[in-house]
Length: 152
Ligand SMILES: [Zn+2]
Image (cartoon, rainbow, N blue to C red; front, side, top):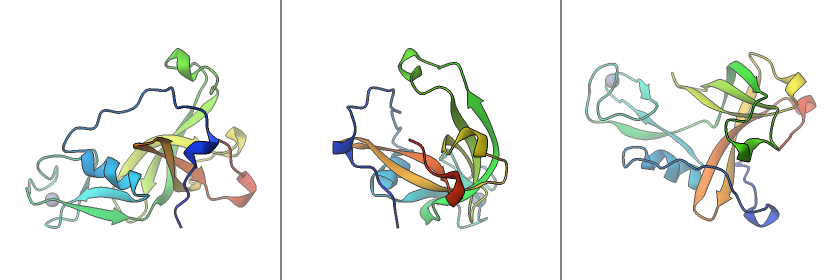
């Protein structure tokens, strides 16, 4: 049920991309595969995001990468009116949200795709896997509210 964008439908991506560390590579590789995977500690149940060498709660070293539900609830959000870099100037205003990922104790920061006046705390969202280049996939949160529609 993953939703992916088709690269052929879009102009070349000209915005900054992350440079994943070796430790974060499984997260980005999972996005590429249309999955949301988070580093999980089997000893205490905590999810570490961003990933770490040791569990941040119990210091266990034996951490796994679990596939989690690509959905969540908006904890908070903001509307960006001033572009952080000139390349984003055509995107403003846009929304960025803190989302509590279902089934985890992780709160992730990401773009919110929904009409700005329809966004609210508590809004349900799903993760959209956006193939921005031939080898890079970014995640975005899209409203699950059918009446909120989609915006990209
Ligand atoms: Zn732990």
